[in-house]
Amino acid sequence: MDNSNILTRIKDLCGLHGMPISELERKAQIANGVIRRWDTSIPAADKLQRVSRILGTSMDYLLTGKEPSEDSETLLLARDANNLTKEQLQVVKNVIDEFKKTNNIG
Image (cartoon, rainbow, N blue to C red):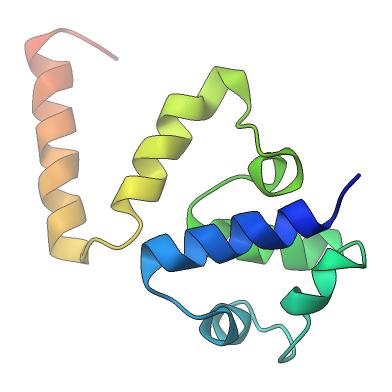
């Protein structure tokens, strides 16, 4: 496994979120500089999980660059919604609920 790709994917996602790696480390409660070392070391699962949650992606994506096929659309939507306010998320949820109601889904 080429670990430098993990770091590249994290950098790319941080860029999409307008978040420096140092802020990601702070939010994930990871010591300063740890993520940058993931290009030469294998990250601990708990740290990788916290990072993936904050970035709105899966651990699979960070490790392999591929989303799990059965849930990739949901993960992409979650990534898009990651920076919305609570109020904005509620509007999106209301739209989804109305769509489900109108189309007799779940």
